[in-house]
Image (tube, rainbow, N blue to C red; front, side, top):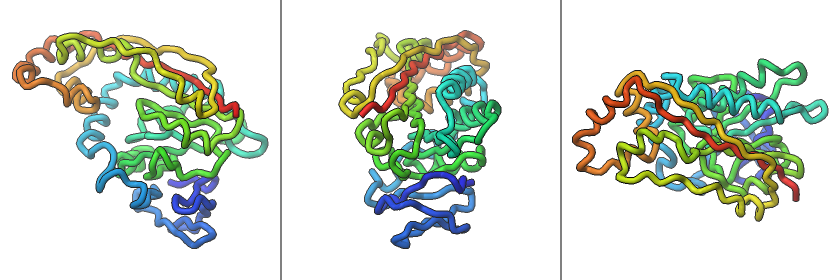
Length: 291
């Protein structure tokens, strides 16, 4: 459902959108119908990167299956704790969290559920935006308590200064566009694959595994952000089936990089990993808008 307090903006002119029941409208009379699943499509043709932008329906199906295994639950819990520690309402208004590139909403709703369970004041507004309609449709069906929007991460359809925290969980950072929407003191949480993430799977695919370089903060600094903190969430969990391993491959770029000569024996290689520990390694970085 769409929270009536969500600070949505018209993607065509930036004017505030108001709830009119079956649709949301701006003062210039641009209106956007509420989909039957409960989300809004605020992605105009001019902001589409292709006819059907974003990840595919098959990729989101793979993600739902992988997430249901519980493998990524400790990472989601750790991110939720971090968010809760830095989130507070502004006066009598609810705090607003926007998950940019939210996909099917797994991490978004984990954060919402945790923060809401702790809230003793005004309940925060949680929003998820993704350019893929398939991801938002899945999210709206699974997690109806979040405001879900089809939109472009480079043109987030929200009012300037209205978002206390932008999160980007395994997504793409777009610092300059974010900076135009945030004021001094508002923050960004970025989470991305750490150097050991899915190491055991990567060792099956590549002849040599590249350890990721440290994150480059120059784009954030140029946009007026200062890094506050960096930390890692690292743990191992056993994977119970080959199907789960295949779904994890399908939801990441690694699955599309398996060479033809390794495809033939992929099943037998994966069989060796069943019930063995798989490394999850997530790098978390906090930034604050300072200018």
